Length: 428
Image (cartoon, rainbow, N blue to C red; front, side, top):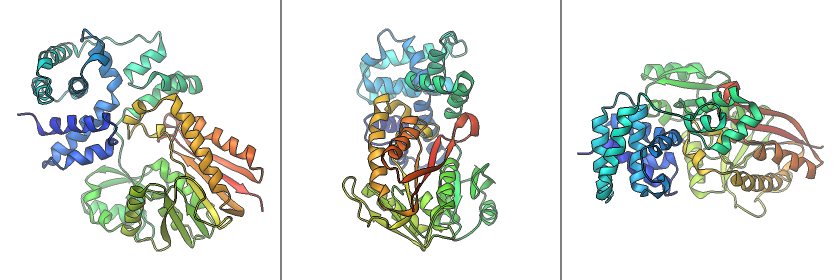
């Protein structure tokens, strides 16, 4: 009998590879088939780890398969990758159990003729896992790309911008398991009070390093607590919280959060003492529903949710907001630690496409800012095409805006995901 977590993991990976769902949604979909909390935890560990270390796993598989990996059946390669992750990076797992289940999963996929290949490749990998060969450091980009399992094009970019030490630190950061970070709902509580409430519920936390109102979960199930159910916090990465703080610090009386879902930045904006109303919007209907649920759960008294169209004029009067936050849809390359599938789904060409859409969005939003008001532009991307280049192009067109300053977090420097934010003041 195949272990439930392995069966569920290969099903989740299939959904992700098919482009049907992202990592979080795929895991959530198959998680309901598992009834043991240990299996659910193992599911997330296997799926995330397989995607995180896919480049390194493929390198070792290629040395043991007599044909190019691209010529393998996708179902067989999926099983090999998942099993390779367990053999190479989960030392506590008995190799025989991994290999036996891999053979059965190959048969389950209707690829019985490949069962022998699966068995032979994984047994070879298991025997040699303490004496593996990797690309030498003579070619640093190739070495980093394989050993730290990142696309070569992305490694080349970071090496060019930041050098070897910073790049390697960044790659290591991305391959660490992320922690859960909570943003306190200051409409209902404060950080110290929430920290004590969670401790009483068996959830151990510590204050965030830089975000003023965040907590890092060290132990326990925060999402199973009454504090979550009753809206006293939302889940939000610390780097994202810092963008919310930046936007809230200069927020005026009326605020538009243009790409607001799931709602963490809306929450931060709504508690600013100068803010009387936040209009929270998004272009995707499912995300609008998620946003509405978050704000309702958190009992935010001064926010309303509005759906906006993806193109064309926005449904607001020009000059009607003191502050507009454009947390633009982006490549997400700053969040690879949490979403490792992103690095394999992106290419350099994507950056150009994202930048064009971001430029259009910031131009659409600019007219909504009143004279002397502020436009805040942010992304969770690490790449300049989506950040400084978009802002520079906007400022070249709109001479009535001036840049106030840049907030940027970088993993190798700050120990946080790569986020970018800047304020743009409209002339009086």
